[in-house]
Length: 170
Image (tube, rainbow, N blue to C red; front, side, top):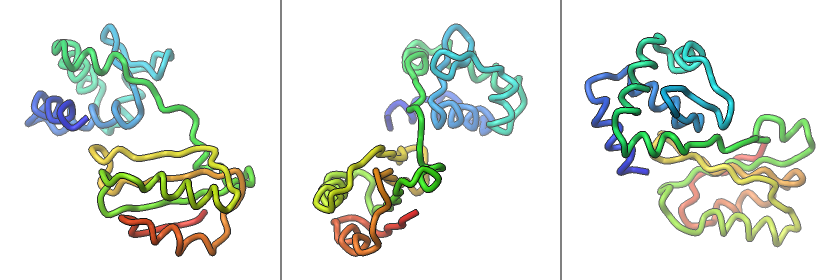
């Protein structure tokens, strides 16, 4: 991802508005195919993408043209997909648990494994694991949606996982 991100950033260097468009596309898993923008198989109006990125529609159109003009970047953006449904915002309403974990180094191996082991030992299954991309998010988080609420006594054990700096239950 880092190599691709650097290449895209180089292509739109000097154009912060176009960089906003690229970030919006990537953060939302929006594909660019045939000079059109898609959320999976749903075509999105340029104006809506522009509003989400905080730019005008011409900037979105120019950014799409730049993506389409570069075969390597075009191939990547053509295959992007949305990660799908997230239960993060409705976990409490559904009686599910939500754990947010912040780490010192998002490239450190074993954090998800350690958290899932602790939950498994407590008899709590994981419904979803959502991980922010460290290239796109200044403070990436691991969010685990669990089949039931997580007891507070698990927080210190989760904090003991190497690399974990903050744990929040929702």
